[in-house]
Length: 221
Image (cartoon, rainbow, N blue to C red; front, side, top):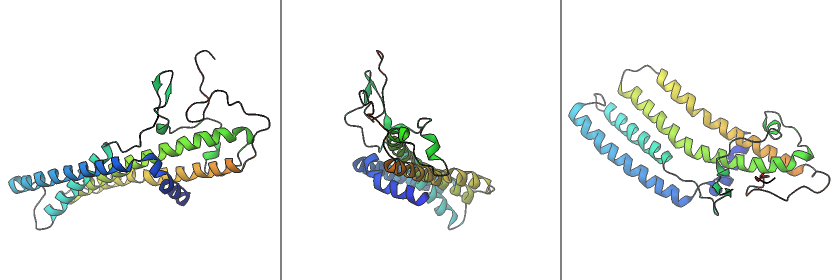
């Protein structure tokens, strides 16, 4: 599932993330890292906050600069904007933030694969598409953020006499990233199963649908 999820991530990341915004976020992160680096060096020369020795201060300052730069990168929006903006009753909706699916779709996203029933086929295809976008969006935001936290944790461990328990906490959060990739793989498995499933008998009701293909109930319904 991890391999399948990784392939989906590489194939669809361009539909979720805007390359121009990524470059802008990278430049901002680099600028912040340089400012932190200069400030950290000045503080080290004045107060020796990063420790003593020939190598420890350099390692700590570099890790802190990279860690804060990664966190800044994760805070700058890199999502590809929805065009046109999706609205329901005049209020904007963001289907790219969706991380949940309907109850009828959830059984197909479990650890074990199961065939998709014809009556659930359209629901799976609709919800999984949005779920994959939400998972990719979360991965692109969490990866630099948690990476920055991990670098700061390593810097704190190297620059002081802290016990390695802090590193274990940082590693625990970083380990959530592979789980998101696995969820992405399971969603793709369900999507492929839905594509191979027989469509339901009769004509599907397609009178009223939202921008993402799901049914939207209007006030007068």
